[in-house]
Length: 184
Image (cartoon, rainbow, N blue to C red; front, side, top):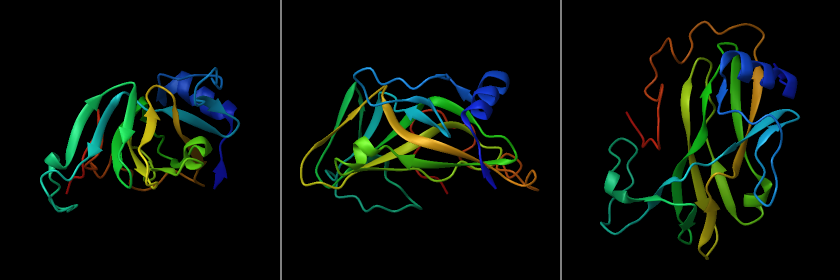
């Protein structure tokens, strides 16, 4: 399994629409950087956030997730309460090739502030906006900036196309748009 370069990412984004919208160069002018890097793509967080709240004393249950556990905000700056988290989505829409697995890593700028970005792998054949989870591990409120870099995606190519892709299985998060809550 090989990690794929900026040349490969650019070609797949421009020719096959693998990443839309696609930013060909790293942008860092007074913001948290985003765009194409040497061996990855730094995606942006959109301005749609679901901020975790325990106002209704709900129990967190992945099999029966209560939507009222979140408050929705559309904003340029999201403030995450101490020791809490927020869900968001990427600005970019991804279409993963059948022979590629995509891994997400958080940006060091956020990590150095105690903000962890978590995303599960993007499986071969999956497409959609990526739902991002920002965990604020600090005892202080934390800011997330919309339309700026949030995380880096690394593209790993398998030795051959997979036998059964996410699309073939009709995965439950296929084609998701917006911030998507847990599904069974």
